[in-house]
Image (tube, rainbow, N blue to C red; front, side, top):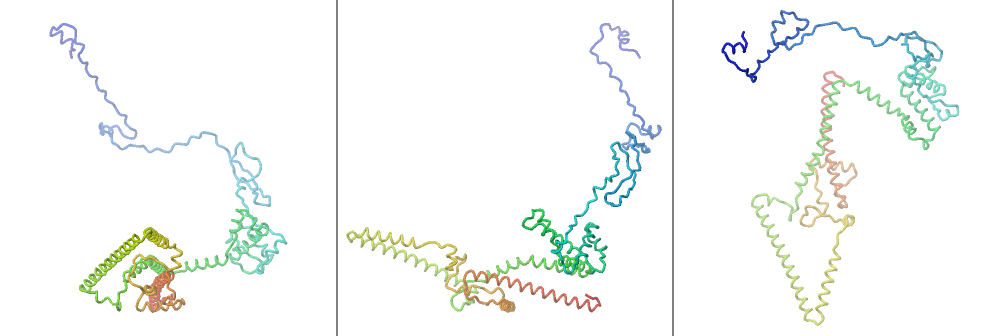
Length: 445
């Protein structure tokens, strides 16, 4: 192919070539990817320019480890265990090191921890005497506890005192902790002990009866049948429900009592006349009339007081020198009245029985009549029986504010107790019926 200068010569074009002409773009070199190992050339050619996204890994054996240093030899070394008292020399393989000790000490001897079992003298044993334990058996117990590191199940299994009574784990524990506690108190009085010693002294207090009862209870729990477990779960759920609803029932009972309590009316106390619409209209008119009468009565009293004050002032004005005396006397009377009006303290209110209820009632009535019974019918008879058992009179002799409040709380508590007793009797009846059914089927309970 001819170049650019040959074309100019053929066309007889002279002159310098155009330097601003753009040079031809360089040829794009084709990158050749290396064929991965583990795949043939023909298969790789079929893949084209887009290789698969899956990496092809060739399975190889694990390479041999590269040791960075020289291996240390192992030697057959002897050692002595300090836990043994016979001086026996044992041997084992151990790695040889430059800082290796040449003695025969056993490096695991630091884990050989001995339990500190107390010892006592003949004079100290006088305070440790026990009618059920002899001196020889006590010494044998201390030696066994020291030998088996206070592992009491193992001690009980190995306990074989000649001509001795059979001992339980609780008997062994009670005797050992009693000896330790008595020795500690004998050597250091309790008022001279430090804080750590007092903690240790309290920890040595072993309650044998409680431990025996705990194991018996655990044995009974393990011996339960599936039916007994389900019955216990049912009773627990029922108890939880009763406890959860107790506060709600008490609140509803209190609200019901407040709704049932109403102010007493004149006459025989019957409200049958005000049950209909006509009776309610008459009651409304009566209340309005009483309100108007009270207003007129108060306005008349105010007018009379004003007239009396004006008359007194006129008389004083007509009397020579009497005006100032009358005004001064009126002021003194007013100040005296103000001094007489004072607010009672809480102690004085309790002493004089003064109370300020939120909803005052009209009329005069005894405080004992304001105690409304919390239950009626058959429950009232049961509550009266409960009062008799508690040696409490059904009616208060001295109905003060405190006693009335406590009596109402007592009524609420007795009512809740009767409800719980009723539920308990129902559950016991169901339990008896279920037991009878199981006995009829030949199942022992």
